[in-house]
Image (cartoon, rainbow, N blue to C red; front, side, top):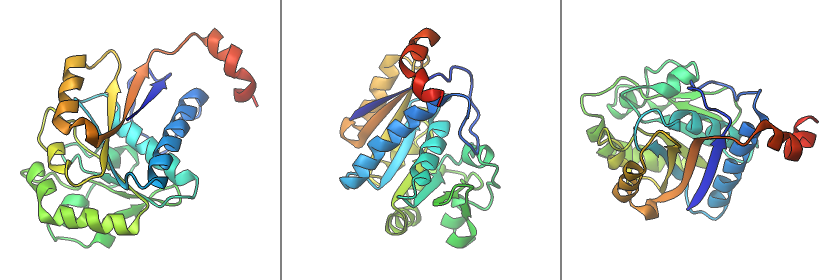
Length: 235
């Protein structure tokens, strides 16, 4: 299991269709995260990766979007970003996409897969929004249609990233446990009590967690960064 810290984004974030341009150190941390995921892909450790958190507002969606964009930027990977959080549809809002039709409509048989896969602004990155919220998202994600969708996606994409609901509030993410290769767990420092994090790790099982992203870590002083990084950032 690897750890990755994200610093320099201490205010509430709204997922966007482009990476922030005013925080170079923040961007470098996502590139470092990309390198770790690339290593797992090269070693064939994972091809389907679910990004989740213990509770809401830990930054899992913005982490998922930025990771997907970074993975596609290099041109090495064909990436599919899927919003399985059918209760919120944050991916669609964050990337300025229509959430309907989406995953739920495809799984119900109302539309074809070509009707729900959307091109993003990043070449090589494709997005499927969540669609309308069904009566029981957990049952939909545990169903055979979703299992077939995951299998087909593995055959057509180099990496399938799933933005999933938080683990503790609902049962949806538990339905995915045996269908994905692993989880990337986002933990917001100073927000989520450690006992809750520990419980989630036990619920998912440690062997299924491929990495932990520690979000909103308090950055060192500006003087520290100017001393060690300014020569590179000012170029």
